[in-house]
Image 1 (spheres, rainbow, N blue to C red):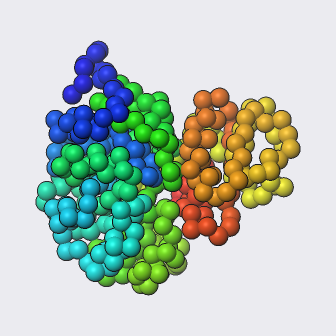
Image 2 (cartoon, rainbow, N blue to C red):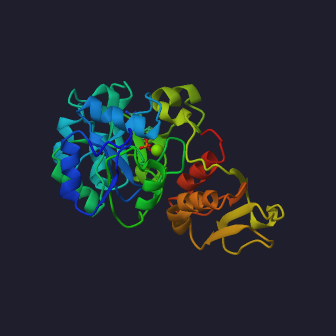
Length: 331
Ligand code: AMP
Ligand code: MG
């Protein structure tokens, strides 16, 4: 796919989702916007196409990809044994930032699920994503469209920054609305298990399926069990080149330094910061966090001081999780 020029692809920036879908149908890899972050898509039934996602990102082969479909009618062609709880959660939160893990259908290649017998399935709400998926007439395997380990891309320019020359095309769209990856829920057992927080919180899931439980932090499930269920969580994620220091409150911020950037909530702590970004709400912080990390890197900050999220928006747990992991902490 694409024009080969000394082993590099020419990455096209497209506005036409039909043209983007045709590249997918020919076995290509195309980045596309969703309401969470930009995804890097390929035909989930084609092992060669899926392998190109892993090599473009430098992603470990055991980290499963989420399979994206245009509507619930495609569900029986990608997953099997769809539980009542999965149906209830999908009914409540799909299309939207929810991924349900179900037993895998044979249509989905083993490469897409990192060899797991289960598959994560999501129906995005973003109109351009929905139109693109519909036009491919295929299930689309898509992780976030960044180099493995880096902050996820929330703009098409950030996709180009990481993957220019490594992918066939990026479908251009506005900066993403939510800015954090989907909530992932394992629905292969009777009681759903939350594997990754996102814009949909544990308590919102429990309002629909009361038996939904957290994976690690309730003491009933070991970290080893969590890794077995969601192997991708062991790899580093969301990390800029600069070192990230988390602080609890503006009052605990160490003194500013000319090589340090600050990302937090208003007001800005005193000092002579190299660069800063302050947000007024948890939602704005979630939307802008990855781009702020990338901007600090573009400015060659050596250190980024990040104020930890607190408060009671549904997004607070997801934001704290991404903040911790961008600082190199394990979940
Ligand atoms: P990314 O799209 O880059 O955020 O990566 C997708 C993430 O979804 C993986 O790292 C897993 O945490 C989760 N995931 C996808 N498929 C499965 C699955 N079959 N079982 C458990 N977790 C999954
Ligand atoms: Mg990712």
